[in-house]
Image (tube, rainbow, N blue to C red; front, side):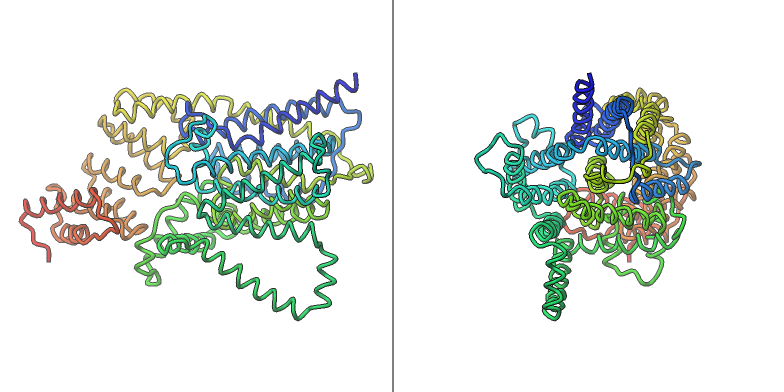
Length: 609
C-alpha cells in the first residue's frame, strides 16, 4: 500500500510539474490574445493540478517537513511590498496581482515537493531542457524562411514564440544543457539505457540545437546571455572557487590586467548587442533614462503593479519640457508598455525597497545554487537575471514559471536529511496548496471571459458596432483592466453615437496605458460632443509626451480648422508641422495627411509661411 501511494504521489507531482513547465507551448487561438491569455489559463489549471498533488503528498506522508531558507523569507517580504504598494482603488492589474499570489504558492509547493522527493530534481531538469530544445528546433527550421512551418507544433510555436524574448528563453536553457553535459561527461557513452548517458546525450543535443538557433539570429542580447552564463558554468564545473583563488594569489597582477580587459570586452559586447541600430539604441537608452527619472518620483512607495506606463509617460512629458532633451530623443520617443529592463520597471512599480528585495531574492537563490552544487539551475538563474537587463521576460508567464523551478532547485538542499529536525515546519506545502485552490476559484471564469472577448473582437473587426457594443458592456467588470478591450469597446460606443460612455472607457484605459491612440480617441469623442477645449487639451497632452508625433499635429490642425472652434494662427502652426514631416520612408498615411491639410488650406485660402 505504501509503495502504491509513493508511486502515485511521484506520478502526480511529476506530471503536474511537467505540465507547468510546458506553459511556454500553451496558446489557445479560441481566446482573445491567445498567446498570453492561453498561457495564463494553462498556468491556472496546471497550478491547481499541482496543488491537488501536493495535498495528497502532504497527507499521505508520515512526517511532513519544510525547512525555511532565506529566499523563502525574501519572497514573502517581496509579496508584502506588492500588497502594500498595490492601488486597490484603481485596481489596475487584478489578473497580474492574482498571478503573483499564485507564484508565491507555486514556490512553496515546489519547495515542499523537492524536500519530500529529491528524485524529481533530474526529471524537472530534463523537462526544462526539453522546453528549450523544441523552440530551438523551430528557430532553426524557420531560419531564412518566411513561410509558416507545415508541422502543426511549429505552426503553434510560430504564433506563440514570435515575440522578442523568444531567443532569450532558449539562451536561459543553454547553461543548463552545458552544465548537464559537463556533469555526465564521464558516463558510459554506449550504455544508452542508463540515465546518466541519456541525460548526457539529451543535454548535448539541446546545447547544439540552441547554439545553432542563436547563431541563425541577430538577437545580440541572447548571445550575451548564452556566452556569459556558459562561461560561468564552465568555470564552476571545470575550475571552481578554490583553484581560482589559488591562481589569483599566485598571479595577482596578471589577474588584475585580465579583469580590466575582460570588463572592457564585456562592455563592448553589451553596447554592440543592445545598440543594433542607431535609432533603436537611442530609443532604448531614452526609455532607461526616463524610467530612472520615474523611479525618483516615487522612490520608496512605487506606483504599484500596473503603474509603469502612465508614470513613464508623465516622466517623459516632464523631461521633454526641459531644455536637456535632444531633438533625436524627441524623434525616437515612444510610449512603451515595458521598460526593457526588469529591474528598472520593478523600481518604478515597487519602489527601491521592492527592487532591493527582488535583487536579494535572485542573488541568494544563485548563492544557494552554488552552495548546493546546483550549477545548471544557478546558471539558468544567472542567465535570466542578465537577460532581464535588456528585455521584458518577467512580463511573460512562461519565464516566471521557469524562474520559479530553477530558483527552487537552487534553494532546496539535496542533503536536507542531514539538517536538524527542530528546524522543520510541517504542512507548509499543504497550506500553500489550499491557498492556490482558493486563488484558482477567484479566476475560474477567466477562460470563458477571454473566449467571449474573442467573439466580440470578430464583431468589432467586422464593424458590427451596434451588435458588439452592449456585449462589450456586459464584460466590463471582468476586463476593465485590459486597455485593448476598453479601446475596442469605446470605439463601438463612439461609432454608435454614445460618446459619453466611450470617453469614460477611454479614461479608464489611460490609467492602464499611455498609447497615443487613446488620447486621439478621447479628443475625437470630445470634439464630437463639441467640447473643443477639452479635445485640444488631450491632444496637447500627448504632444508633450511625443513632441514629434505627426498625427497629433494633423488632428490639431483639423480641430483648429473646425468652424465652431476656429483658431487661424494655431492652425497655421500645426499645418506647417504636418507639411514638414519627413519620415524615413514615405508612406501612404503621411501622404494622405498632407493632402488633406493642403485641401483645407486651399479651401480656407490660408497661406503657410
